[in-house]
Image 1 (spheres, rainbow, N blue to C red):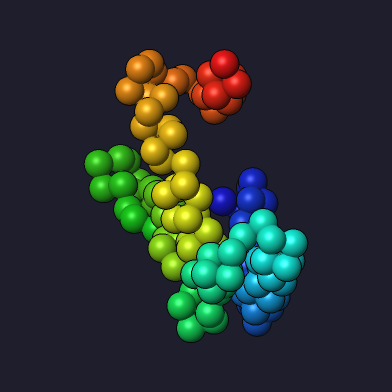
Image 2: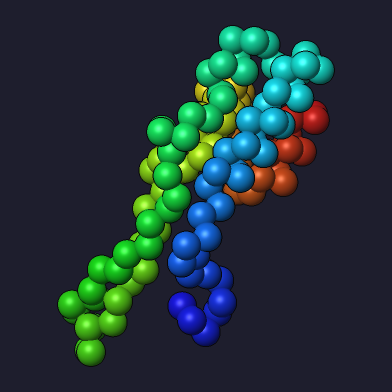
Length: 116
């Protein structure tokens, strides 16, 4: 994990309040420009007591020599979970309709089929 520099130890620097603020401002802008309704804005807005940063933990691979560790990132309460669920509910019926007629092997192929 240290070799890839994919992760950074946050120490005392918590980016969550800033992320919540920026996301809520973006949602407010969507509301004011009428891209989402007031009800959607209220459903999607982030409340700081409902979210938390992802947690990194490790599970041992007991079946391997030297018992290496497998990194796991738990992100069940991430700050955009409401937006993710909203988009899934919005797109799931369309995806299911498309997927029932054919199999889709990539996101690009799915987009191409939508345009047809």
